Image: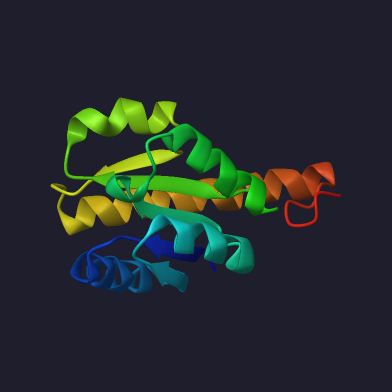
Length: 138
């Protein structure tokens, strides 16, 4: 099961994302409304996927996302969410694996999450075939 961490300053938005994630048969392992809490809890929960609102990230988004990848020993998919589609290229450039616009319909958001989860499963399968454990690094 895909383990997801939700990071959004708006409780109503987090609630909607939680319902969507649970409806996709994914597990919500944590939630926060600010970046310092997110970073601390990511290290403790090591989710497979981080759904984070762009506005939570510090000015140096690429550094912040690098910190997430360093603090989590497994391969984590980072999905940035924003109201502005123009931020998509910046999100990917900052190190996100995917981008979701808040203006997208729930079905489209769900499809983005399914694709991210499938890519995690595919990566794990390839790693097992190669004899590499993503969680331990051995």
